[in-house]
Image (cartoon, rainbow, N blue to C red):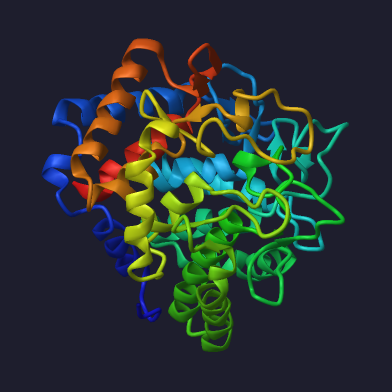
Length: 392
């Protein structure tokens, strides 16, 4: 796949990954409209006003997470761009970037009072070093805003900070994002309590995405040297991602050392972003279809196949709860997309079950058969919406 593209081309590629058989694979117009209306409601309910007047889009409408999280806001902007005023979007992105450390570290979140918090977990009990995804999400935030607004001056203003952020993210010689097994800390934020170490799948996929986006942005401002640097970073990941490939399963593992387990979210996301791994994507599709009942409940997605749990966690997480066995709407759209080309009816069923559950019970952060955590969780709605918007 050529990397000499502008953002519009990237959007077309992303859309094409879920376009086949879409007439049979996606919900009715009424269901789509309901999901968009619900996303608008969630986005309104999650807003908090910061000390300086900036509107913060917090992760939920219940007041549980009283800060602007980098990754959650990135998902909101990516998947519900037209539902957020551009002026508020720009101000909130600047609010996060103003909290960047001198070493390039992007905040995990910035509180209403302006305190930038760099590591996962409570402020007074951080889970070690910062997660390995905030730099990538910040790049995606800026790129999505610039693509949707045409405000290239905004990119020029923050371009050096974005380079510093990407340089801060720990990587192995392979180019993949890396956590030292002797020094475990949070990886991708939706598994920030899980002690994955070695080369990481999800954070590396995000790094590939962010490198692609920066390649395009720097080409647009005629900085060919920097564009080529990020193009090379993306190429390294493409060349070495199979460090994580389980040839027997036909799936990628979550990490190369600790938690060397089949990553349902990561594999589905790789297909969703059109990662160039050739015909191997069909092995992933087949695996997801064959094992569907082991990772889907009410259209929501488990990180691992049931009844498996993560081998190591950074803090105690009860089995079948939260990031250690619960099911999340965050990843539902990615799985639906991954199934759509070859298993359209299964994809349609997943979306139908998801929307049915949301209408009846509400959108939670995560659920299980006798468990639910935090109602009105925004990205549980906006992420599936984003898949629908790319296909219609």
